[in-house]
Amino acid sequence: MKGPDPELIRLRSDYRRLNESFERSFAFRFGRGVGFSAEMLGVVKCMMSCLKGRTRLCMSQGGRPAGVGIVNGITDYFEPVFPVVDAGRWNALNIATIRGSGRLPFVRRGVSRLLRAATGADHFMMDDLGALPARLVVPELGIDVDYWEACALLVRLVWDYRPEVKEEVARVLSGCDVPDSYVSVHVRRGDKSVESPYVPLDRYATAIESARPEGCAIAVASDDARAASELARLLPSRFPVVVCSVANSRGYVQGEFNRLPAADRFRQVNRFLAELELLRGGDLFVGSAGSNVTYLIEMMRAGRGVLQVC
Image (tube, rainbow, N blue to C red):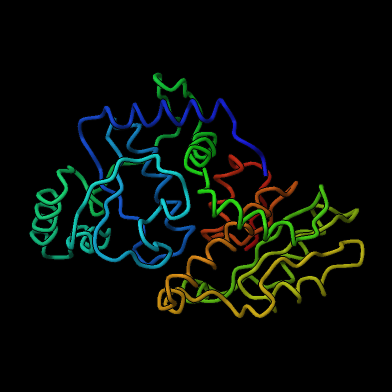
């Protein structure tokens, strides 16, 4: 893994200073019981909206984090870049599903007042920050880029691993025998079928063969090792496959993950972070349309070199 980038260190410092200078504030809750990719997509989009609206982005803490949140939320994995507000026990109410509250809009207003009194913040997860900009312009940071370039830049601002996480990610990657040049593939299984049918594996194989008819090395990560192995079987021999999935994995189910002890959840997320590094490092990434993992990789790669299969 690469060492510190002085330019990125400077930009992180400038971002922190600018973000803390904004008067209005938005309290983001990390650790709501959703998947890691969904959490990070929310963080990056919120960063963009808050910069556009000159709103201070804070992390709200309090209560017991859920899902990928272990103790402190986002700083379980990354070095701090956002100020923190303490919502105490009311943090459990800082969720997007309160928005509108159906035919009871006074519920949303009441929850917002409680959170405002507890944190001093102005806006919360149930509040709409407006449409994301097609182009992000922040003169103080020297930023004037299109949406996808902005996504990649904001991901880099956040993606500064804590030392113990960086060490574990490097350890996992060292066990993946992947060549310098490869196509990365992610196959989502598990509870994804609740939202939409699985993308058949033969469509992945067809997409890979069409993109690289001459053949190439393939690195496959999946939440279901059976799917990764089956894809390796479907591809012709000119596509040597390295399976990077946990050997006994049988599909990621959010509810089951949320019930695991904190130490097991932390270990699994660190493993997933290593797989993300592998996936974004490919010459080309192939993933299912509609998957949060695919969208996060697309953000990381500034929208380039991503082939969506549906």
